[in-house]
Length: 209
Ligand SMILES: [Zn+2]
Image 1 (cartoon, rainbow, N blue to C red):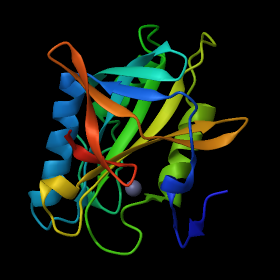
Image 2: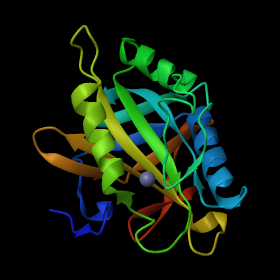
Image 3: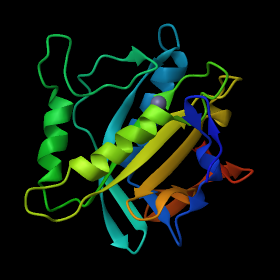
């Protein structure tokens, strides 16, 4: 079991999902780069940003994420990435898109991915609420036709130095039978080849190496 901290879990202590690999399309990579830059440099530098990524398992435990959300009509908030409804209670386009992609046979893997600004403490880990969100998606957001969707959690964190080199990218997966796993083999498909994220102490940084 991972070490459970106050309100957060050190996901780097999860076991690696066996033989796993995540491959991001260039479009997904650009969207995640934009999200972490917004988090690191805009406004108070304390707000959270994010997206969904839609993809397919191309080999056992190898996921190719093809496209990010087309929309970003959510309100960035402090310690929260909330994409269900706007302040008037209307469903966001980003959420409508998620619900339609769950029913879309083209994709069987969906990542819920968001940023954490650097605010000290456990800010570089998933909050326990973040992990509960992924569990809820996995358990309760399944298509009508019974074809299973697999949900992944993604986290982009700004480093204390607030320089691009120390931004981190993480993925976790919740297996309903075996619990939590991490996936640290993360790559971008660029110019017809897979380029891995640069790692420091097994932690992938938000730069290609
Ligand atoms: Zn979070």
